[in-house]
Image (cartoon, rainbow, N blue to C red; front, side):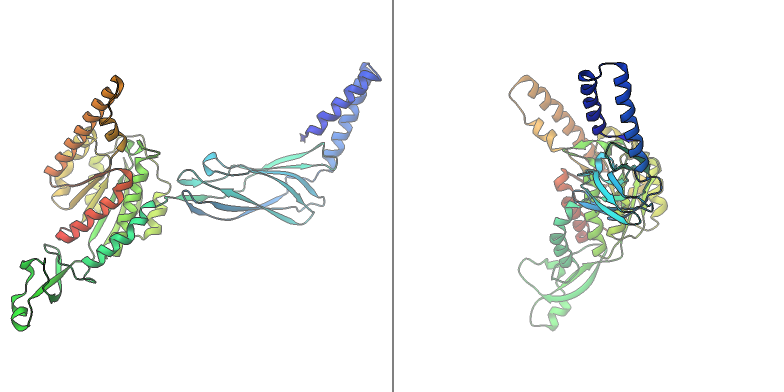
Length: 427
């Protein structure tokens, strides 16, 4: 049972009547008795809420930063008018603009309300319970009950890096021979002949074709297709660190999505693996929707990443030579203790590319001056940058390609490095 503010107003009026007309306990009991009778009658005449039937429809997924709508319908199978308030409870991160709705459902009919969401975090967002308060005809009191109405809205990564895709696809078309371009090296195949133009590599001149033609002819090449790219996302504790307004994990996901789409368009087979101490997500030969759905519920685990286990999992999945892209933190201590000791087993069989999210705030701190506090911050920032450069140098000396860029620049930088490896024929 639930009462409304009208009961309080009537009680206040009754107190005034008792004080002015019948200032005694008899008057008080009379007023309370009248209120109790009115509340009891109102509750008995209110529509029952336990037998209500609920159903949901609408959005099951949305991108982070985009709105979504979920429709909640309520059916009244009883014989009385349902009049009252409905509350649809969602977690705060779902960004519900309004969760309370006035409802009036005649007997045997159905009504619907629309819940508008603006999620502020990735992952699965589910409502808690639907609570209905059905009021009696006097509006003094009513019946209240809660119902479980399951539904899930998956909030997908925003994939902000897709704005960089057209330029990279244009470069890819050049590499693929749809536009004339020269690429040389292991892992390329002959495409066609064309006339020599200033700036062409003289090593690509086909002297036999030149002897048969009136002009100097050069070979064009295109990278081999159907290569294997394995994206490995580190979801250990270092991925939880925030750079700007978002964790490192989100920036790494954005870069991984751009590279996955680009490599797929290049004809390569792309797999995805999320790892810390166990497999958190796994997609084999998937498309963009599969990658996005796999990444959506991922959260950083506050544990140290098991680098040895990760390498063993990578080697188990990749039998032939592949491009292994590891998105992790370029911090000296975790790399020296975890990844570096097990690098030889990967580098000896695959091309390894390590990408890390740099914090532009550290660069700003390194250039800060003015007072003693700023100088100390600058010294700490310089030490952090030096350790990062040292970690990068250790990886490069072991034959690892490294991309280190701020969140806004990581995705295009990683895509450019992939294309550079294509040009060099190192995939």
